[in-house]
Length: 591
Image 1 (cartoon, one colour):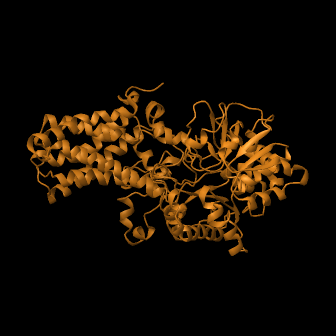
Image 2 (spheres, rainbow, N blue to C red):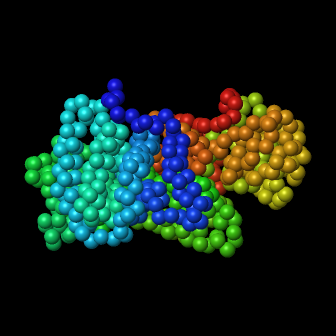
């Protein structure tokens, strides 16, 4: 059972909790309308401080997710999974709480911030003294108390339940704990003002430095150089490090301090491994990481929305990482951008090769046929690559083909001459399914037709207009299809698709499948991000294809044209490893 004051008062409001900031914003806007300018009042300051604190946490979160900066500095190399992300979703509750406390305080005593100077040097000395003399020991004893019996079980255990530290972990605690922390924060601020040394810069500075150090301790990234403590040994008792606080989360009877290890040393709760482990991690920061990912998925930004959801986290078990080409989807279709994009992809492949990565899987447009021949450009240019380059489209083809009902006799295929379209057409004709291939090029059609066994070539039919499919209820869309073109499909048509982005679901009398995707096995650990429009635990089939390539230990590059004979082999291998197909289509018997 949850203890008293463990739940937040606005817990059930969800995103509407931010309405509680409304009166502050309303007061600021009212002042602006009435007086023609933003008055320098406490409502405005509280909103600015809240915004700055939220931004500070977001910047820390972004920093620790940048593997190119933090890879060798990580303390715990596991990934952040969805359970932890959900648990820490409302990490900013403490900012709202302290905003409300500040609002009440300023309402009761308006001169608290209205009549104080911008700067007061004595104020900074005073607030440091009060922090070190009162807040630090108070926090230490309260923290130790929260590690005892009832208080730990019903309150503090929530904070310690996060397996990997993150800046949001430091902000995640119960309502009662944050009331206590607000007291710890408030004492130096209020005390300085009561002594006549308050200033606005002191309030801003203290709160932001306080949050900065909390984020630092929970960052899981060692950024404090050990040389600092070697040169000035006494500093190790005045400033903790991410390593220092991470030991508290693994050995919970040690390292209780707020920011100053001095108090752990005084009361003999300082973990004896603190300095040695810090020096070891800090010393290794400039070296290549011994933990090299087996698999890298080279993604790219699709649009502005997708760019806001790119944490690029490590995935545990077999270590997987997601890297990204810093280009938006539309840039892949600009002729002058082609060389620059290929250079970015090539550099990623060469970096993976240097690191010792086993598989690098190319996502979506990174393997575009017109861009680099489905990856062949890089393999041909660098024949001695140790890393295997994989486009994963063999599994994409397998997923699409296994969604098609067993009794289908005819399909309409757009994007028919692409590497995926070609493989799908050749596979279906072998199953004696008539394939209407939409293409204007007789030469390319005939080339594909000749690849089919002679007895199956008649099942491949070239069409040049959408009108030819007006009686076909199974469309496989590999090329953008406009609503007007979709109108030629008869009622009840199902649209399978492998075009990025997916076509618009325009027809209400038809059904639309997802992009080919697979659900990851239940034992995957550390998964904490979604791919584009996919649900949690679901990845695009090409991504899954790269994973299967790794798990099977295949040593060939999967680039360029698809090997139709390997489609069933790859499909069965994916199922063997616990991957499952995903589709929005109605349940159908697969071929």
